[in-house]
Structures are given as structure tokens and as C-alpha cells.
Image 1 (tube, rainbow, N blue to C red):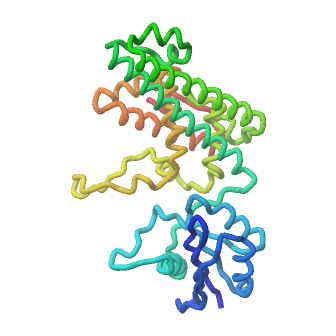
Image 2 (spheres, rainbow, N blue to C red; image 1 turned 30 degrees about the vertical axis):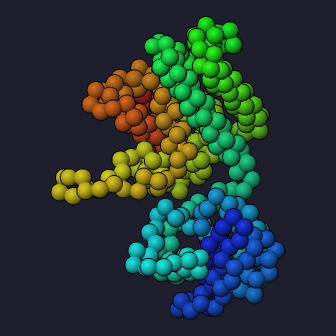
Length: 338
């Protein structure tokens, strides 16, 4: 007899449910987020458990790692791929836990990839770097907006990075506007320093695997972006086709069509947002470093807006990266953009 366990995990506790093959509930209890308490209650079912299902929440690492270290088979449920109880008026933690077990019992549970524990720290550092880069960009845009609003002029990101207090006084006349500008500039410089610190540590600790080294032949992808793609992609063989990978990277259109007409939107959140960001960044740099990529972007821009054109270029680079990682070939811009 094979049992199935499902866990509805929260910040300080989890609701645990276990069923028999016919769906009969034989265990249901709320437990604190303490791995020893969890192992104690699951131990009687160790030999009969087909798997333990953990929903992919923000805090699943400790639980999945602790269970796998003790020999339990763990499955990571992907909540972006299923819809819950459209016909139910009321649901709670118990419902959620047993919903996971029922999906597994019916063999329709959508699962996510459990990334190797030893490689997660560097991946998380790269994610932290990405967060800081996005925040710095937001502050730069805010500063540029301030300049445009107060002076009618413009300023580049490079010029902002070189500004000191005297330079800000030269730009703005009002004291409080100068204070706002100083706050922006100082914060941007601080974040830039943190980004450099993270990059230095990442480059010291991380090394590109052989199968990912050729990513750097793609216009717009340097070592940091290549490492980001490597750590977020994992084993490329888990993607059967380039379309699967491009979709996972959120670089495809999200819409439902019927009779040649758009009838609705698909699930935009299904996929890896970090890879989506990485390929958008690659597309941004490719426009400056590759003439073919620049022309492709301009053709798209003539028909649509800038975000759509960037995503189209990112999709192209993403597809090229798939073949580079899978087949171990060099980047061929003529083949990609012909």
C-alpha cells in the first residue's frame, strides 16, 4: 500500500495530510515549522509513502532538504500550473493539503524542479544581484524624471553615476529638490557598490560548467549573465524542445486563440522570471554589440512598441541559447537573424 502526503506550508506552521491509495484520509494535523517534529510524525509512514508533496512557496528549502536528507521522496508542486476548487464555496488549509494529495493520486500533479541544494546559495546571490540592478534602474529613471520635470532637460545614467553634491546643486535651484536629487544619487552609488561586491564574490566562487561556456559567444551575454542562465536553467535536458525552454523563460506570447481571433490571456506567471529578466538584459546589450540584432529589433519596433520588440529579440536569443547549451555549438548570428 502506497500512501501520499501533502503539506500546506506557511511561515510558522504547516498543515499535513496523508491519504491511502483510494483517497481515504488517515492523517491530518497542523505542525510547527520544526523539522524534527515533522520527521517524528511522518516516521510511521516512511516505508509506505510514495512521496511527500511540498507546495513551491517562498520558504520550502528547509522542509524539502530535511525530508530528502532522511530518505523521503519529495515532490515540489507548482501552484502556477493548477487552479483550485472553482466549485467550492469554502476552503482552508486542510482542503489545500488534501488537494495536493488528490492531484498526485490521480497522477496529474504539476511539479517544479528541485534545484540541487549545493548550488542554491550562488543562484540566490545572483537573484539578489538582479534585485539590486532592477532597483538601481528604477532609481535612475526616477532621477531622470526629476531632472526633466524641474529643468526640462535630460541626463544619462553614466552622468548620474558621476554626480557629486556640487554637480546636483548646479542642476537644481530649489533646496528641497537638491535634497531629493542628492538622496537619489547617493542611493544609486550605494547600490552600485553592493552590486560590485556581489559580482566579485560570485565570480570568485562560481565557475561556468563546460556545457554553458559557449553562452558567452552570444552577443549581449557576459560571464555574469551566463552564470545567471546556468544556475536558473539547470540541466538543459529537462527541456525536450526549444519551445519548452523559451516558454519556461517567459519569452513567448501569452494568449488564447480561436478561429484566428484572440479570446483571452494565458498564464503569464508560468515560468522562470529570473531567466526572463536575464534574456531581456541580453537583448538590451545585444542591440549595442550586434548589428544584426539591432536591425532585428528596429524591424520589430517599426511594427510594435519597445517592450514587445525587446521581448521578441530576447526570444530569439533564448532559442539560440537552447541549441548552444544542448548541442554545444557556437553562436551564429547570420543563422539566427537570416
